[in-house]
Length: 526
Image: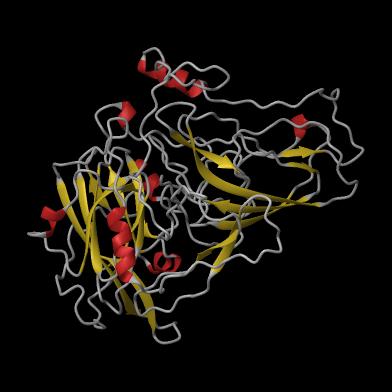
């Protein structure tokens, strides 16, 4: 079983934002429709006013585009529709295995070919990416960068003349792609007065071969289960043993909710079928658990453990440099324009996060004053019986942008404590920029004098998204070794909108390789 992650929330159609050069920022978006009206271009390529950025930049997630060749398109202006599924795919070409961003499972991604005057509709299914040493394209709008403004282009697209209008040069015989990935390394080396970094490996046809020592995957110890618990934003990989009588079988999924919160309790199904089985065979339905079976979910999570072998060790931080304790709460603030006179909010340590119209990473890098405060509290300002009887009193939820600064490569222990403010609930939390070890969890209030003795510091699971128990707590440990501003947020879309987010400012290390890199020259303006 492996884990990979990242998702954002649904957004309405956004301005022009082609994902061929993957320096992008889509406002917390998982599914975005892009509608592009292509402007008229002059008869020659040299004179057209469409800006194409070919900047190569170390660490930026660039999906490489192709040059135009001659295709047959309808003579009249047409609507071109594209579906782009943006996913992180683990590639073992170079070990340890590293994730790359793919479009429709491909790298480089597919090329958009259109003719002058066409209309382009791009459905983008975004699942963000983890980036080391560079977070300028992390994804959440106003965290790392600003979104693309209406009417602006950011990326590359191949626009050909209208049907019957030739290019002012001979027709090319073939199409090719160019990967711009060396210049930045050379430029960096020249600035330092040193030779470029040594290559990671030698390859033949892009592959390392079977003798290269690979390592570092997020495997877990094997265990048998007939159910899989997936928090929002988690993407586990599982092995299915086909040891049942050949037939057709339903796979079924439905929401789990053991709190008094209404959910869309529908069941979705897919079919697993053996070869040579007739489609007329009615699939058998698995026996589903009760949607509030807390006992099974707690037992399932306890079985998740890292492989922790010589080849795949679990390097759990044992010495903690800083202890953080964050309470998760729901509430209602006064609102004169709202229907009921109040507005629902969600908070960490009684602070509801709000977005300004400027990227936090930009404000941090360029030292722009007045955008945020570096005073997010390590503990809640008002201790109380977190999971006692339901609390409806307003505990003074403040609204603002308050970040927590952490030292480079220090060891952070964070306990996320659910509360009964309005109601208890299981919150799936995702941390951008890092994986973390889930060292402990429990129901009720976290006891700092007793519960740490029960932590699993030998083979805890390693994740980047975790769901805590309803009315309980969960403890994670991680090392912030990736300087940047990194968002941590609830993966429940509604709670994110209500303010259930915060961000860490990770300080630079002691060398350029351990420090934030400059933004790309074509970073979207705010």
